[in-house]
Length: 195
Image (cartoon, rainbow, N blue to C red):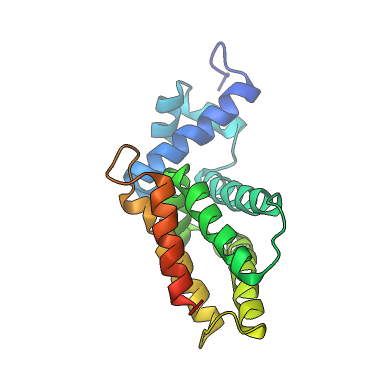
């Protein structure tokens, strides 16, 4: 099928991904058709295949982009001096980064089951890289005796789950500002590691 008049790959490609992101977050991957995405973008359904091979590739691209951006943004943070400083930086970064991307976070956690085995493995590898960064911080804190943690891997998963949970309830303009939420969560994380 021909491309819709006024459609350009540098404009339409990002619009396809944005529409898929919103629709997947709202209705779930399985319930969204390529036809719905096309309608949202304003192109014919067949034209979507100029931008993505299939719906599975689109889901993977969204998740992969989210995890890659997460790792790249974290890598740009300034270095810290102590495990405690590193843990605070990780805590605040995680809350801030994810609060700006609620749809990406929802899809990254809720739609993993819909990835093909090969795509799942790629996304899972990126997730493990991020989790290992926190686990390394915890192990460093245990080594210098600033943290009291019985199981660093379990604590890593618990902390990430707690921090990611902010996205389910936090709203700008609510009772607490994001900065206040960060501080309260930092206090809870610090207590959780016995610091």
